[in-house]
Length: 252
Ligand SMILES: Nc1ncnc2c1ncn2[C@@H]1O[C@H](COP(=O)(O)OP(=O)(O)O)[C@@H](O)[C@H]1O
Ligand SMILES: [Mg+2]
Image 1: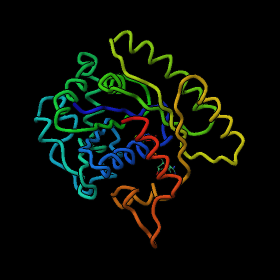
Image 2: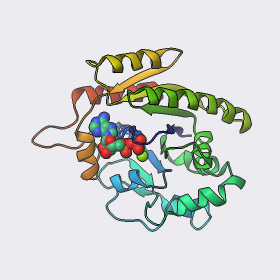
Image 3: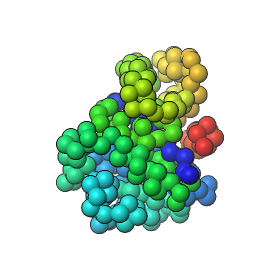
Image 4: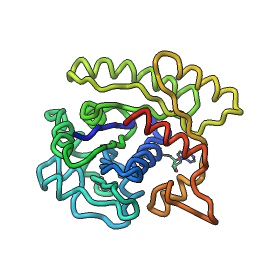
């Protein structure tokens, strides 16, 4: 059975797709059969890893238009990495989540358990907000990781999420773990960043910091893993590589 992890924060632009995608790549490059599920109606993870639009997407699977095995495609540039995509254009997933999903809160949980035997690790990239779709994805997961940027508003977001998660676990009888926080675009020289780090470390959270690294954007443009991207001989910063390894150690 695959361990399933989702990356979520209500706020947009904090690095959910970047961190979850890079983390999924690391798992695949470490030799684990890894599935990345694009649960964001904008489909950013899918346009990162795929250059051609496949026949089916996640919304087709949950609406019973195809088998899940028909919609999962290999990521051409990363061995062992597979993706269950979402097409940003067309917005089928958005429409589905706004209409049908209320009656089917366990639809993603069922999907994950169906493919669980075929993979070692499953990673879910979520959209901002905490609506039905995000809730369905969180209860389909063994663990939820919170990526945030080092600003006060992100910490507020974390507190709101902790509160919402309590309710979600009770109402939908989920035992999802929440023990890891990633501070993205972290710079130890900045006092505010250090303060946010201290605040996030309070309680029992394991905190992983990821520096600003131009390789993320470049790898996204080149449709590949940041770990495999090289330009003039340079790739991922050593600090970034270390952070991804630490995150893998905490989660898997
Ligand atoms: N550590 C980082 N260093 C440099 N650029 C980053 C970093 N994290 C994210 N980015 C860039 O910031 C933008 C937003 O990140 P993204 O992962 O799409 O956020 P989210 O999924 O939370 O909306 C992307 O263009 C991405 O390339
Ligand atoms: Mg995203």
